[in-house]
Length: 247
Image (cartoon, rainbow, N blue to C red; front, side, top):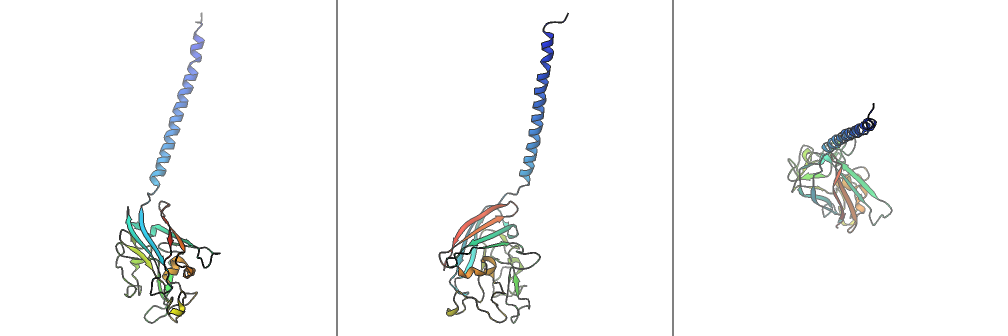
């Protein structure tokens, strides 16, 4: 004769097994998700920290206070310039209807080996193709064989090591660019002038045009230029500030 309690004992096995199976499946899914998330985290590059001082000035003369300068105060790790993308965005009070945005990356801003700066084409003592290099130029620590514009390096004026994309940002070094054949005389202040063999308007691109754009000369004291710098490997912004133009 069957025990009156036997059927209820058999029925209780199924729910227990079901709960156990659900727990096992849940644990397996959690482990897979955790492993996947851990793999993604491990694959992400950590962004370095950067403290820097950026300045832009336009006094209307190429031999005066017209320049872009970016001084590295400190970094958590050395930052190769080939690993950063600089974006300059601005609107001049003299031309409020237009916004200029220039993106500078290293080692080249365009395909192949095309440089973003070229001038002095055919001038005495210079190659027929002119002076070609990648702006902004680097100076100081972290820039091997750093030299000045008056020196003659392998590229007739600058060493390859100081071209953007080839040097590394470390504490104490800086990037700097200036105009060429700009505001040569008081009556050509805030203007470029063409000089045979040296600079041709709307053809040549000097260092500061390569960084801020050909219309940079419209900038005046008090205008604002926004500079953001992205660390390409991590996809993170490491510098994002407004720069008030001096003059």
